[in-house]
Amino acid sequence: QVQLVESGGGVVQPGRSLRLSCAASGFTFSNYGMHWVRQAPGQGLEWVAVMWYGGTDKEKYADSVKGRFTISRDNSKNTLYLQMNSLRADDTAVYYCTRELELEAYGMDVWGQGTTVTVSS
Amino acid sequence: DIVMTQSPDSLAVSLGERATINCKSSQSVLYNSNNKNYLAWYQQKPGQPPKLLIYWASTRESGVPDRFSGSGSGTDFTLTITSLQAEDVAVYHCQQYYNSPRTFGQGTKLEIK
View (cartoon, rainbow over the protein chains, first blue to last red):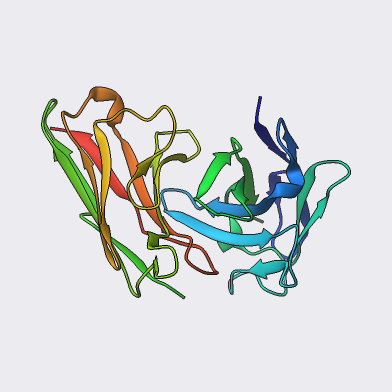
């Protein structure tokens, strides 16, 4: 079945790095743009980054993470990554991986269960 | 960036009654070329990821009960739940996918009165 499974979360000190992974299965990975969306405790959803498969403008980032986070994908492994550097306390959140059909978007129709990142000294 | 604003922030409705949640975008999310509104609604139950309910402002995702409906166009949208059920307790989020960055409303918490 269609599935997204995140991993890599944990507790990390401010200023350190963490790499999240999202394993996709059950669908054609190359047909989808892949997003990271986060949710701080008790807060709403915040879009973090997207990587499209095709096109020229493949990566985009929220201003809050630009220059610190890097999104990438390994299409041979059907896996999405988020490299998070210089982590701050306000990066503490559940990080979700989600997909969006690239050629005709209709929202984010599949979400992973999320992985929790806690930035604390 | 397109700012999405939902109202109210929280809502308590009796079982079997109607719940209405509003979402306003800071600019139109209607593409004139295909006359589609690039607006989605998500339901998020406690401890779970969001679930896509409605896209194109009014199209229900497969498997979503027909008591959920979406309406509106341009900048003003509404999610309506007719005959509220206990399992509808959740936070509801609107989101635009008209352009980047994708942006969400702040969420509306729906409870049973």
